Image 1 (cartoon, rainbow, N blue to C red):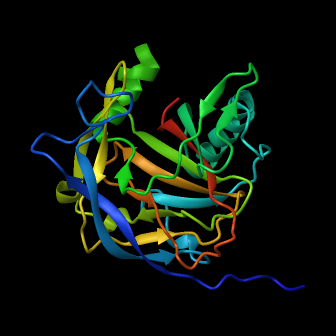
Image 2 (image 1 turned 90 degrees about the vertical axis):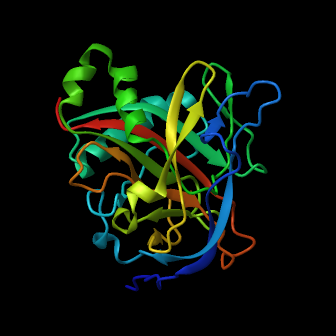
Length: 284
């Protein structure tokens, strides 16, 4: 029996870091901005980086050490074309993953996003016939939530239980999985939390919805950043990305971004992926 072994494949590429375009505090409109107002005042600061392949060394990273982790957990859902199936079948799988690998006592999933290339299927179809627009891979270094936004998420979703839950450890974890095919184009890069200077590197950015406001972190370039990815990541392999952690003694977050890999076969399928974001608590 021959076992296929992947040779590590580090990638020399560029990443789009944070650059403020105006004198105003950074913002980004998720919904339609007011007339005459740009959708954002943040642009790219393009920097060369080396993204190291962690294939074969997955045990050297972990949620509480580097801020990210890889787990093998095949899903019963294959195409992720039906919203009801995602919620009824996939959400419980993610809850099981987070309880098994993140030692969660309680999990509250608050959203998910399916990403595909614009040339792929344009919509996700729910069982009632409604459709949801696709979203493309994000080639911008960012963190999904600020620490303030994470606390606000607990209050937004957990109501009367929020104050009790906020007294214990709480996290937001993004579970990211390829769909249908292994990733060749736009793989996902994650940064080792230990290589960050949080006070200097992280920039809180207003995230403006139609009915409320949150905040994300943009990330300034720092030559000390250490970047990683899992080459040829398959649909059975899940990346757990820590977005926020109330425990200041652990890795508290992980900047991440899609990136261009010029060494990928040009005829390889475009990337498809699903990410599920969850509040994770250490108490029931």
